[in-house]
Amino acid sequence: MPFEDCPKLLILCTARTGLDAVAELLRRGIPVKAIVGVHPDSADPVKMSGWIDIASFAERWNIPYRHVRTYGLSAPEDRKVIEEIDFDLVWVAGWQRLVPQWLIASCRYGVLGGHGSPDGIHGGRGRSPQNWALMLGCKRFDLSLFQITVGIDDGPILATRSFFYADGDDIAVSYYRCALAMADMVAGALADPSTLLRGVPQPSEGFYYPQRKPEDGWVDWTLPQATICSHCRALSKPYPGLKTSHEERVITIWNCHPFDDVIEAEEGVISACFESGEFLVNCVDGRLLIRQWEADDPGWNPVPGTRLSGVKFAEQLNTIVARHYEKYPELKVSRRIARLQRG
Image (cartoon, rainbow, N blue to C red):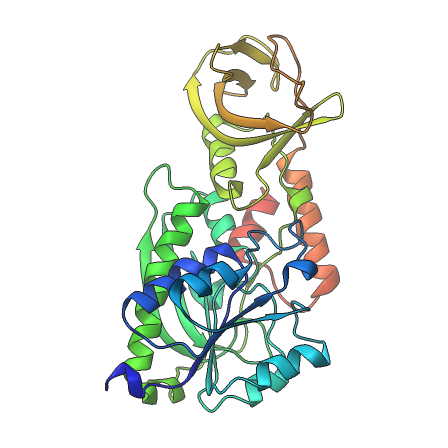
């Protein structure tokens, strides 16, 4: 089937991480009716990790675009904006909110979403699965294209792709891998629209990864170097980074690397500094090289002997899980998270 005869596609995208998948689809010559994003005046960069104004992207690719005011599409004027577009299929690409029932019901071919985890979509519904995968040191990620329903990532599965993490992959690389896999699955579905109506149902009960917030990203200097590096790679840009502090100054770590097995001071103490601005911090199994960092106080600089503060990872994990169950008491957290919490 030629792509010019495929369903009329509307894309919801307002996170930078979704643009690569959209661009890959456009490179394949697939027509797009319009792309919708959150208006710059309504965007909260803290709560919307990686937010981007889709205007410049849409203009570069010469496709129509519209702005909405609410991320959850709850405002009547937002519904009016979308209903004025001629579409019969929606693809949610870089949109970290649930899609309202009225939009799902208005689509002849439904609403497409992408989700996955190290345990597949059924074993890892919910939030931040790629961040969790890297933090947990997982090697494989199973990504699915599915029909969005009013539930959380529980709709019929249309296709699945898997990829493997290489040593040193960070969250940006993870999103690149997902972008190519997702674009491939969406293109395949558009080439044969009949597949959009015959997805495979998921098991009724699933497991969920709990939401992470910026305040959950503090370093635990008592962990091994390799684990701290995994946490750093998982929280690097476009996310808020791994945090540490010194006398109420917050330092964001963007890149770090295991250095040696020398243990010469307590965990969190700066051991040595280099003219490049990089420095070493003592951990439980040696010294960690902090390669890229920034402080909220531009006058702060690392000094040997300075003690950097952090938060025990176990404490942060307990807070994250408790917050999840307070909001979703019936949704079981991922088995991996549960095992990690038990220690």
